[in-house]
Image (cartoon, rainbow, N blue to C red):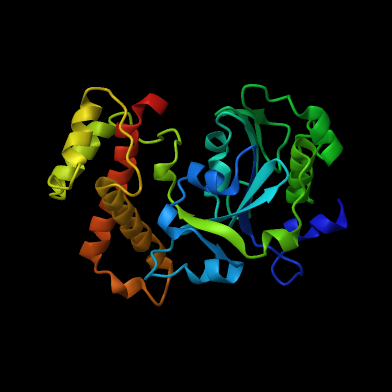
Length: 301
């Protein structure tokens, strides 16, 4: 693979090195700020940030937010999320009305490539197993995959230079090849919550009933706008909640509490800052947020 992509597969202790987990997406014909909005970027958190500043936000007080940066590259916008995977999972959202490509490096889970057009995954695959593909046209990119160094017919597992190959494939699709310096420069960025994107709900089929059950359990019935939103969902109509609305601000608070409860378990400096009762309630709020997503956006299911 080209030497300038060696950072994509580097390991800790090697230089240059971007990380063991990162996601990069490319969206065509969408400005950086609009691309951030598409993934649920929160307008009141938009700022230019260097990677070090993004890393410093991963703490108990700030609620361990998901943060993405964006840069313009010709007719494409490139999004990068360091130490996170959500940007890659939202490639279908990014592609609505256009096309998008995404690459995920995740050394502890599933590294992936995805190409989507107008809200639908056309071709997707595990980076180590490009012989097994999914999407509406899994063979669409076969010539480009081969040109990038993948062997789409080899079922033995392909581990060397997998992320570099995926970024090379992205370049062949988009014509864009961001450098490591570009990805690690101070970028326009935002905290984002995929709840506010138009991602397809992935919760249980009885999402509305579950949401109403948790609302009663946690005594949240007087939350501004919630009863009316659930009533609309009961009629089978979609409900759109914006991040700056009264209900939206409560959803953001519940999401933050759930993230704080989860991440602080692995943070020795913060684990004891929540009681077990507080943590249990926070996890239940996380279940509520997921259920509301399914209940409110049944039109996307």
